[in-house]
Length: 423
Ligand code: COA
Image (tube, rainbow, N blue to C red; front, side):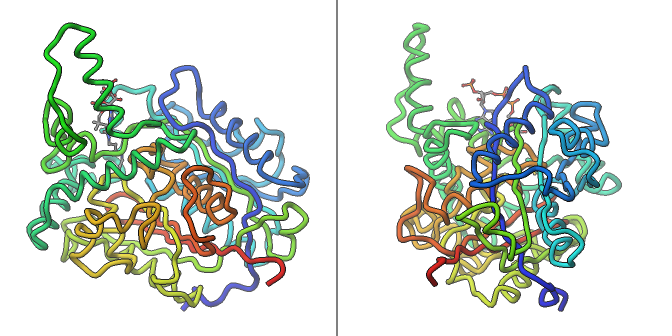
């Protein structure tokens, strides 16, 4: 298989993130510069003259900002012209594919040093126009005319999953509560609040306005009440959805032998896989994502690792059901056991399989082209022990990223390792 044919190793030597959120005053360039400056701060020794190429994950600046051909513009904006630039569009997996393509270019020997970026500026459009723009990542011949948009696709997957495994609705709420609680510890996250604090501020707002104060006792009570948490597409509620976001992320990838010239704290890309699939109507199952399972299989094979070796994972929780399915596609739990594991807290920071310590797409935000690169930033921080209050205990050494385009038409899984210099 192609996964074992890499000619040389690849390291990540620095990462950067803009704040994720909704920023009226910022465009893609501003967000990218913010992330690029953060990248420079993350490295011990950076020389921009050493960067040989720029790969950008971006879903649709054409639709969101009426600006196509963004990669050379961003490279020029930070003074990197005339290096070659490439824009990669693979829907919500654009960033993860950009990481993999840059790594392949380094592994081939073509380049030694490649800057990878991801950016999306989504909030200039009204929500209906955003939903329509996102729907262009679905099959516009068969799926969209049937009335589907992305919340609808994942709602169909969620109801199939619940039916097949007799899963309880509360499992989705537990994913949301966990990811909001992680995001509350991440200063880059769009929602820097736990669901409990969102609930309390809604109560306080009602009291301030002289309205009846809702009697929610806890987070599950709040999430179960359509007044606190309206239905979007059954069974996916508002708090089951990732938000519409603006944001950028960057990572610097170099050949393994050059890592120490940039930083004392590299992490290494030891496994990578990618797979594709047709649209949902062509699949035999709605309760798993076959391309994600295949991408994971390739990545584990290349890394010579198995799911039990993974210390933490950033997975593509565009909707809460997607996280539960991901934990099964990646082999952390048996088929049909992911929902129970979520309820039992197995994916919490201190659980057996920490998932989405950054807050995930749900709470950190989902500027689609930036998401796959942003996931690498979290793994970098966790493996280097610099994730602050959300640091996973036990000195994690192996981290995985799982990035999904559409409902699984494009899936990328990358595995990273920290190596101790003294062995
Ligand atoms: N989770 C939790 N709260 C959210 C939220 C989300 N995903 N999206 C918005 N909110 C909150 C806002 O903060 C705001 O709170 P406030 O009233 O206390 O200030 C309130 O909900 C209304 O915000 P608004 O921006 O008007 O929401 P909206 O109705 O325009 O958008 C969704 C809500 C769910 C439709 C939108 O977030 C969405 O489309 N998400 C999915 C995006 C998607 O499909 N991405 C691709 C995945 S493959």
